Amino acid sequence: MVIKMRIGLKQVAKGFVSATATAIGYIVIPYSLIEYLQKAFPIAVFSSALIQIIYLLGGMTVVAAFFKGIFPKKTVNHSIVGLASGGLSAAYFYYVIGGAYTGTFGVFSITIGTISILFDFSLVASIILGLILLKAATYLIELRQALRARKAVPPRSMPSQPAVTQPEVPHS
Image (cartoon, rainbow, N blue to C red; front, side):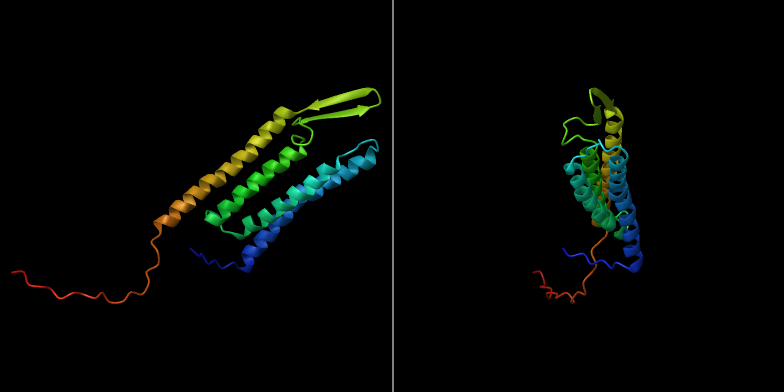
């Protein structure tokens, strides 16, 4: 089945606005914050894996945001891209908060000389991650509704040829 969609300048503009806002939130602000902290506190060391994750998952989320902005809401395409965007956002948050590469989600430690300070905000981070996943689940519901709406629309009628009728045979 081939679905043809016309994408106008308005939808492309919406996509660019959405992608720009996402790039600021997922790449520019985190990277600027890391740069500021490294300059303000020279002893602060951030993993190169963290910066790579910000660029990689942040970039993928920006691309998903662009396509999510292009497609009209309540359509199958918008729902699929929204679901992918929600999954990428959850993965991004999980990785950036430290769940993947440190093994402790939402727990940060600062060590200065012999003094070690541990910050544990795993409960807050878990709630935020749950909200991100809940938003992704709304796209799953939207996808289900869009698929049902697509099935409810009758297919376009093709120009039909006149039906060939058989002559009636008299019953004896």
